[in-house]
Image (cartoon, rainbow, N blue to C red):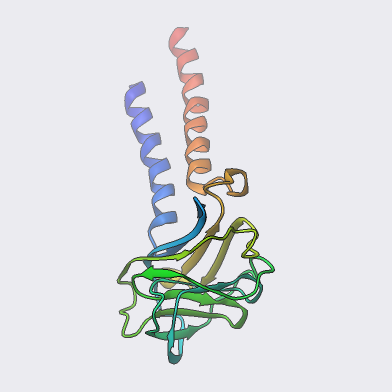
Length: 205
């Protein structure tokens, strides 16, 4: 009897957690690795609620003050700009720096003007693979990056999406917020304990 009740509560908690991670999302990390700073991005991007702006050619770079970060190839690559994202107006005070090397499609944001960048001919919602860029012989501080988690969002309903930049959170865990899913799970498990306690008391009587 108690086991059935426990299983039902787990199902309820799981149903609350799954919708939080159901939609597409792109996450880019920027961290100190030895003497270098490395950017690594992956995920997918839903373009349905964004407006095509223009086509261009870009390389991997970052400019914290202008809220620009692009991961991927350090060679000029064809890409497309879409407008309609909203979020932080900067992630530091540093000026522009091109990546020393990189691989993968160019993916990034020019958040000051509300734009996101994807490889040319990208199909909305498809996996973007992994894009990496390396900034040799430098540090996050030298690049003017303020450690923290930054998120830009757009769209509504099933087309709601986000681009998250985790800057320096691997080497400075205190700057990373607790994941919402873990908080929700903890609350759910605590709820299970609260619900079961009266039943145990009744059973012991």
